[in-house]
Length: 152
Image 1 (cartoon, rainbow, N blue to C red):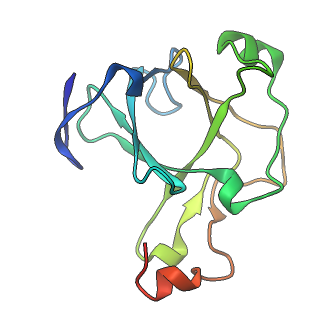
Image 2: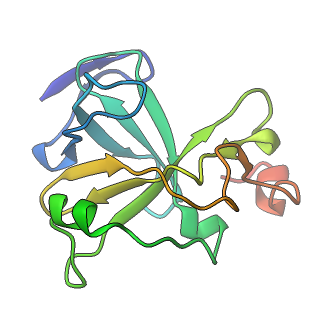
């Protein structure tokens, strides 16, 4: 499938990269299908690109790379809807926002994206965890040495 994007230009995406968000994503209720685009196979960042709206791209971060103690209990209703189980655990991502410098990047820890890599469905869930925020500093102690030195 070829999709038009403002970030990547025309992009060919494979069927296995497409994820359906039947409820949309809060703020974008009509956007139901997104392409998952890894930035780097081994890296903690990826993109979620709308297949119909060229301007709609989310930068995603793997929460467990940055926050070892990040956890929440997924409601049974959501686990059933996405067909998740111990044998088929969810993929979890945080939507990242960068305004200005990389060191100031924040992530939304209160509303993670929960995705099923087998049936290619996903949902953004809103947590009842007051210790998490929607603008949590990703690099509270500054950038890792590699990033400061110009590494990837």
